Length: 288
Image 1: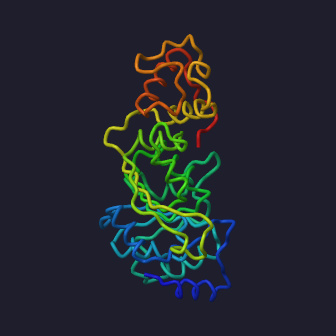
Image 2: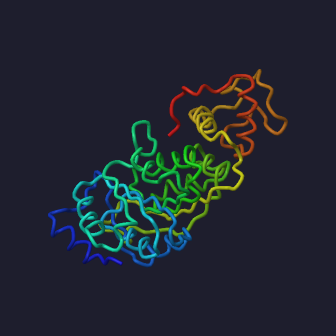
Image 3: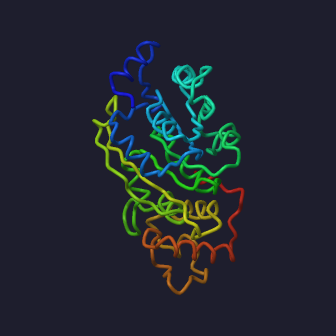
């Protein structure tokens, strides 16, 4: 795996440097790179989506395990570095590595169509040290729109991890955690201090695993996200004030409760009740 000195040398040789605007903080702890790949339980010939590969530290680890990697890199200099390292003629990894130069997200915060095409309707896993600004919309897009994504093993900002793992009643409980917990089983892999990265970010990070449920709690994840957006945009109000007191609330839910007091199954039950009386429009604002 690449050391900090190797990463610096590769960038300096091309006149490149980490770009704060793109959230470029390179994970330099080799043990943590291995820990992330191990947590993802990758196997030979599996398709892996990687976002923000940088100089290819994690990419190398995935290719070493004989995975097929589809990587999205929006930095043109780093994209060329990856081409030169991994896609030159006679490179052993060339047949198993696909590079998408551009944003992993398209307009509307859905997965880039070029990445979708490269995944080729195959089951896949997301394994990535995610740029912080892309983390939430990308994870939501995969949870909502891509049932073939069986697992997400990601390094993200600690506050995003807190939202994913948040239980009912906590200040971090909201749309992201509810959708993630409804569609998958969420667990913490590790907490990462800033010194695990170069350059050091001003925030702490965490590695999180989302394993898609065989039977998700709902088959309407997009509607669930929109419903949560409605509820939690007014999280300090009572449910009756948000949805109308004429709504026949399920027996397990009191209209005087606030959104954050409900569990994901209760929120899904309430969504179904609300749909019967005021169906959620598919033209509502995109939840991601």
